Image (cartoon, rainbow, N blue to C red; front, side):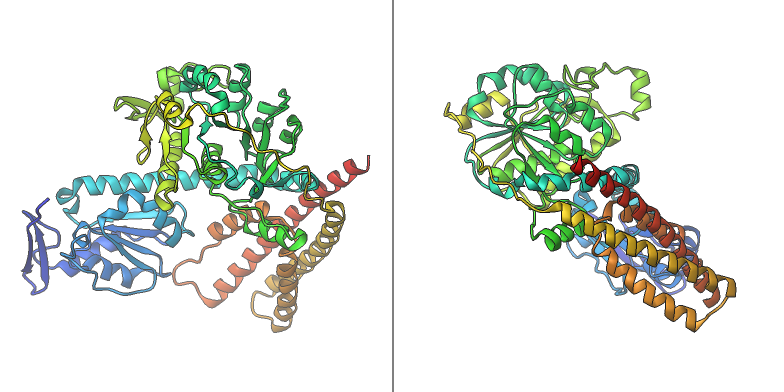
Length: 561
């Protein structure tokens, strides 16, 4: 697209810019215009995303106005060919051309992690008229990122206790199960990753026909649909920690399928598998991984999970095989107006009420037709696209769903074409794992954790008492502060020894969001705010410690029965 770019002089002598027939700054006083715009738009503790740099007046005004060096991100299509260049340099100021828009989430989650969903978008006047598609694309990306981050935060809060309990309970499995590392590149054959979308039903005959010519991985609850059709997968990937996930498995008795799971997976799911299993690393829980490494000298490979068990299964497929990978049942849409494949416990027909309830909307489908999807499915689609953008797999991968949404970046072929082309009718022999588990003394480690938790609770009690005394003084008290600093060092040291990250993550979200400084805060106000913040932190850490203690005691009691 050819854009006419004219640098002109405003009435007050400053430069102004005209793109095609549109002025993007005032013809009279562009600096004053920018300052007025920023006064209206600036929002405390938000990441500000500016579409259109122009002459840089809005960036200049925002740099002067921001109170806490909030992140500023500039996106300008005219940066693409260096028609315009960024003149400003400042902390937390980032500039991108429009090629970043399709993968915007990869950058914003890195440079604006603390704001999560607090984004303020400012469009330089008339840039949206000159670059309408780019602006719409950016706005859509921002909404998608906000939805995804909000969903992730909600998931963290909802499942924190489940994940904490599951991690403690699953430590017992370290005695028998092995690391996923044992399967690394053990196969050189096609792998089919089955998810439970409505289109899975029509693939069942092909799965039966070619069952011995591939490795079949089931993503979570999809296992029910496969088993009901007398198809037992080779591996079942399961990472969900909630009770609904356990309900999918509690009636199953899988004799040959092997479980691949994370330690945050619901601990009772393991009971449905006769064979020993494989453990994958705890993605997003670095401190849990550090605990395992420090306490047991084990380091499970951490594979990108993405937003769902299907993403985890896709990455595991690439990890265990150097062959081609196919996705099936990955509709991410209500194909044929159905929610799931037949025999899935949640399968139902959709109607107008359902569409409204799920905030459904239409997107491009597998065959180019419009299909109904929802924000959760859309987030999962974006995750798939991000996974192959960040690190494109070495082996060919295909979307053989034959229904649902179109996942950009995936080659689309039919499942039959995939299996005919890559299986060569050769039988695949499943790898026989050794029968040696990790054989770790988790009982001893759990007892040590109880001692550490007792000490942590004692230090937290002492810290809260000191904070209350400091608060009553309503000012600085060096003696009390010195005592508290000593307690704080002990608390931080103990937290490094206790695997409590699922609980501490949600505490961090609360503390970071609910105790933000106000503009023009006095030293004393800042001091008292920090005091309240720390007291809330210690109180919530106490509750987390008590809950973790109860989980450990339950495991120890059951092991002694």
